[in-house]
Length: 348
Ligand code: NAD
Ligand code: 89Y
Image 1 (spheres, rainbow, N blue to C red):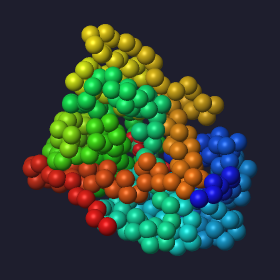
Image 2 (image 1 turned 60 degrees about the horizontal axis):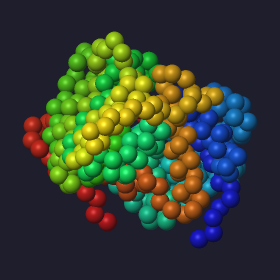
Image 3 (image 1 turned 45 degrees about the vertical axis):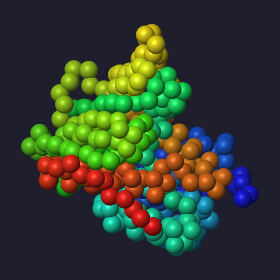
Image 4 (image 1 turned 180 degrees about the horizontal axis):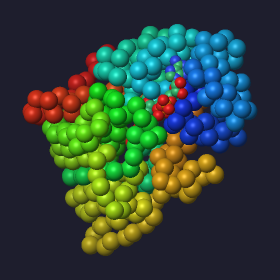
């Protein structure tokens, strides 16, 4: 397949988190990813993004697609709109990236994947945590065999940061911390330890002002035999709040690694212990505390763009992300049934 030199990108949704996508696409312009148009059904948001990034802006996706030839649609709206927007892209043979969570239900996710397959359209999910500089550093240590085969892990995301301020809709979600945030951590568990055989889960709603669970504790048996604990909460009250960092402990046959606050990686192997800072530098558009999440957007967009350009699937293709979404579904089922649950599989 011939490699594309230039990829014309259209952005749908210019809200809170899309600002990071817009900056990332602007940074990737010298590499050939050209932000060509933006769209938001809120005309004020569309205009603000269009003016800021110097591209035409639209408040209707169909109008944008008629006016501007695009190769890749980056959908950073909320999950309820992912299925119809991705369908519009697939029917036109345009590649699509959808933000996490993939869609509100397993059936919706399958429908998005099937629609793309039917139209031979490239599809990926913007699952950014595994692309952050620190998570790539952890993956490298594992891939080099420095700690041997991973046997046990704790992946922890515990905060009291006011996530409802920037994302007020979170307080109204029928499913909260597993679907919104745990989904990233479950994806990391797959990334580091492989697929999951079964899981159990306990949820809690500790903040009385919100609708759904804000705390989840999940225990998983991976097909490799490894066991992991995935923790996610929006209700922690901690002096040294690590938001939005994921903290890790992974124990292998030959050693261990610990990723602690401040993106400090401690690796123990053959009786020796090494420490390193493994976070990426601040970018001109990132700031603390959001930086760790933001910089991962740049790496995610670059990965998406490069894979699409080569005609290859993204690591977090629609198909791949179904496996992460199946863990979300299994966690809710396990919490409701108080039983251990085997994640669903999508059979094509
Ligand atoms: P938001 O409500 O701030 O922005 C969504 C925007 O989409 C709004 O401006 C809305 O007008 C627009 N929109 C909705 N339907 C549209 C349509 N049909 N056509 C054009 N525009 C449309 O939401 P947000 O907080 O930016 O969240 C967006 C997504 O990003 C969510 O899926 C969320 O889970 C995800 N997110 C990811 C991270 C991360 O770290 N990866 C962090 C925050 C949010
Ligand atoms: O929505 C969440 C996400 O995906 O990452 C962090 C977040 O913005 C708030 O917890």
